[in-house]
Image (tube, rainbow over all chains, first blue to last red; front, top):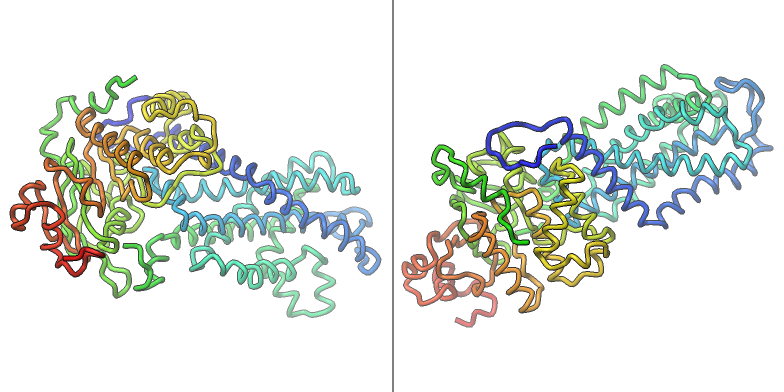
Length: 282
Length: 268
């Protein structure tokens, strides 16, 4: 790495500089996460409550037939584990987007955006950093779940990684896209009600879709159209060393669309403009 | 410890008349938030190795101007360039040469001083080894070496500001922007920061744009830009601005230019 960085001649940026920037952003996000232990604990408690209490109670109510990727009858806990992994990422994606809104208000986002590297790249790094944090949470969850007899094949822990990165990026981009539309911090409660809960319940996270279809065909179509369903299925298949191609295509396409939308929509001045004449930042 | 930074060397490198290129050039910049116009046809320049004070009350448009120069907001009309690099067209090259201290605190309170500096270095693509060396040097210069590993949260307001200035200098910019950096600080901390920044101008040839509403921070040799309700009312060397306003000091000159009634508690 060259130590002379103040030459005037236009020279663009080297790959090494991009990598330094990327690792720096991920490193800082990781440090911040480690300092917020409550956030880590609550990120873990949420899915564990579902696993220990909800799934245990529902085990008797809901029978799961043999559906791919499973090859035997499985316990309900085993069925909902991938859904809970995706839920961790859903909450994390929304939470890191919340932190971007928060950062924007606190001025930390300014530090990031004054970097000379292209803004789109900076925001992409920020999304990747959020995804990295979600991976820590998911693997911590998998570790605890292992003691609860959720034991995917050992290689599954590795094959699920790319699926988790992709789904993490998709949910993070979605969160960022939504956060660009939020005017104030308080509105995040609305995101919980209008985004997180509907996405989670209208998906294959808690029940197989053939069951939903028996109950209501309309809800079934809704679930099929829900990108979160495909994130769950992508993770579910990857955890057992398989690829669900349709889900992969949907998640990849949604990631691209959400990310472009999020980067396009992230304009700090637009937030101020919408606040109107009262938005008194001289 | 105070060996001249490579910035000075860069300035001395023979280039096609470097003196002619202003550090910061703002040409006919206007900006509106919806119907509210925050800046109207603002033009001025900041020369390298000069201290330019941007004087204006709260709401004059100073922060909007800073947001435009730092690429935070897109330019609606007009042109902003840093050492000849247009902030819209070649923002990377322009931002490389720019260091900023924003008005609100932008340091990570839960991270240590060194971690804050390393993060900033990474954002500029500066590798870990070089970044660590520069952090050590800069922390020494601002007298906070012994606090390198402490959390920023434990620093005083003045120390945090000094850290932010050190951070802004980490990538060795040639133009430094400070948005009301002394607000909320005690007398000693204010004096320290002002003298530190003035030293940067004389010793390292950095061009400084210092936004303020405190008249006593401006010295007779400074360049002055008076911004009021989004318009530049006067600019030039401070002594000239004062004389042309037919006043004895900056305070009176400012009140004459803007109309005394706008001074909060001005009592004129």
